Image (cartoon, rainbow, N blue to C red; front, side, top):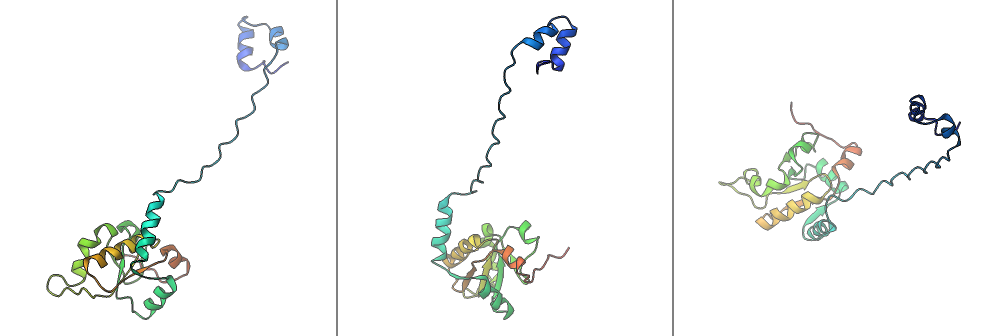
Length: 174
């Protein structure tokens, strides 16, 4: 028997449309080689390289600290107002103890209440900003600096690295 005695050919033989001899003697086309498995494409970046360039340029225009400096200042309680500029849902998954959440997209509007506006606005209020990877807080730090704040620092660190290092993480009250 050849490869052509499949259920379809068996049904055709029973129906009298094709003879068994035709199935056994007819040339059979070789099975096509299986198509190669598609190569997994590298994930496309979620933003163009110009964003990395903007963040790098911004970091050169602001004061930044790395995670070891951030942790040392945290331990000394010398970070001033700690501002987590991640989105609310990120903040809800855990944050640096003592941090307030002011998302990057709202910082220019929500920071004022935290620095005493309107009665005692302190444009020299010490603030240290952080986010998930150091990009959003750099941009937010630059925005605050452009608004006239003079004592703002950006933490050039990944929040996941903070967590992996076993440093303290707080959770919002339920």
